[in-house]
Amino acid sequence: MKFITAACIAVLLILPAKTQEQLTPKSAQAVLAANPDGEAATQLANRLRAWFGADNLKKGPNPKTNQLDVAWAIETPGAKSIHVVSDDGDWRLPLKKLGATDVWAVSALLPEGTGLKWHYDVDGKAIGGNFIEVYSTPIEAMEQGAPKGKVTEMPVWKSNIFPGTERKWWVYVPAQYKDDKPACVMVFQDGNSYRNWVPTVFDNLIAKGEMPVTVGVFIDPGVGPNEKRNRSFEYDTLSDQYARFLLEEILPEVEKTTKLKKDAASRAI
Figure (spheres, rainbow, N blue to C red):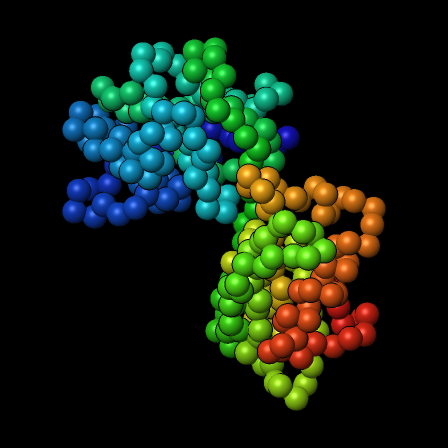
């Protein structure tokens, strides 16, 4: 558990009407103004409803995050005190009521690597909650002017090795790939969690010569009948099925358009 000092906390504040844009945790902290009241508080409450979703705001939503900056908000009538609380009780962060509205909000800068299970404490009643873990974006994950590879969303895959399942998947091909030179390949399970940022890391490292030309395959777990996720069965079963699924179904499909190296040292998951 890492703690937050009072100096790290900034209550969400209203921007002047002419400069209002979509709220972010960082922009909210950056506004140096007094606590909004009256019409300013009402306007901010409306912006928070638009940001979190009006219906979602009443359920105790997950926070909005941007690297280490995190914003919480909730709308509940008649509350006298609301905090974000760690489940172990070691950490509490007070929310600010916005004028005469029922919207409460706070934004905080969390220390690098903070991880905690949390919930809203509304007058002693627990509402919502989840796990949060925050890190700053490393330089390798920021665009640095390197040639950009292409990420292609592939047709939904219906597997024979995992019959009755289908899944989304994506393939990244670096800009440096050449048809006459087979590339290394790296597979990412739970691929949708990685496909939006790993390609930038690959772009940068490949351009610097710090990793070889590498194709990325981002693949989600299968979904069966009635939208039942097949994740645990696929990842945890002690069998050859998932390896066969990749070797016999997915990688051959990738190789219809992109040549891949066959040696073990050129393949990763």
